[in-house]
Image (cartoon, rainbow, N blue to C red):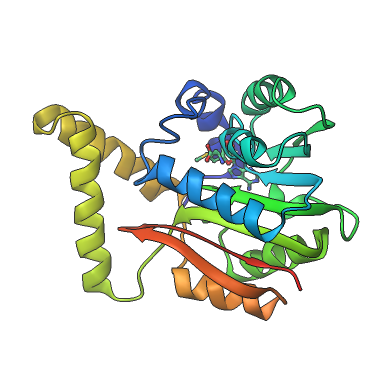
Length: 240
Ligand SMILES: C[S@@+](CC[C@H](N)C(=O)[O-])C[C@H]1O[C@@H](n2cnc3c(N)ncnc32)[C@H](O)[C@@H]1O
C-alpha cells in the first residue's frame, strides 16, 4: 500500500527548509542544480514570449524562482498539496516578480483551469506521486489543454527503468550518491535507507520513454530529453 495524499501532504508540510535552497535544489535528487538550470533554460528558449507559468508541486518555489531569472516578471501560479510549502513559495516568489502570484492548495489530479491559461508549465519531482496510468494520462492531457499554443511543459523527476537489471544498477548508483552526501559509512547508509524508505512508501515513477510517448499521445510536439543520470531525468515538449 502506497502513502495516501494526506500522508504525503503531512510529510512535505515539515520539509519546507529542505526545498528552500536555490543553489543546491533538492539534494536528495541527483544533479538537482544542473536540472534546475537545464529545465528553466529550455523553457525560456522554447517559450521566450511567456507571460505566465504554472508550477505543479511547486514546493518552496525553486523552479519558478530560477525561471524568473531568465524570464522576469511572469505571472506565477503555484500549486501544491502543502500550505506551508505554498506560504514559503509565495514569500520568495513575490519578492522576485512584479507579476501576479497565485497560490492554490490542490492535488494536481483535481485542478481545473480554463484552456490556454499558461505559457509554461513546470512539474519538478511531483508527478511520481501519480498512481494509475489513467491519472498520468489525465494530468498530461490537462497540462496540454491549459497551455497556450507555443507554450511548453517541462518535467524533472525520478524515472523507472524498463529493464530490471538496469533499474537495480541505477538504484545502486543512486544509493551510493545518497550515502556520499553524508560522507559514506554508517551515517551515509542510514541516510540512504531513510530516503529509500520514503520513496518505497510514496512514489510510483514511470519510465522516461513511456512519459515521452505520453507527451506525444496527448498532442505535444518536439519532445526533448535534457538530461538523465541514474533514476532522474529532465525533459519536456512544446504545444504546437
Ligand atoms: C519533492 S517536492 C518538489 C518541490 C519543488 N518542485 C522542487 O523541485 O523543489 C514535491 C512537492 O509536490 C507536492 N505534491 C505531491 N503530490 C502532489 C499532488 N498530487 N498535487 C500537487 N502537489 C503535490 C508536495 O507537497 C511537495 O511540495
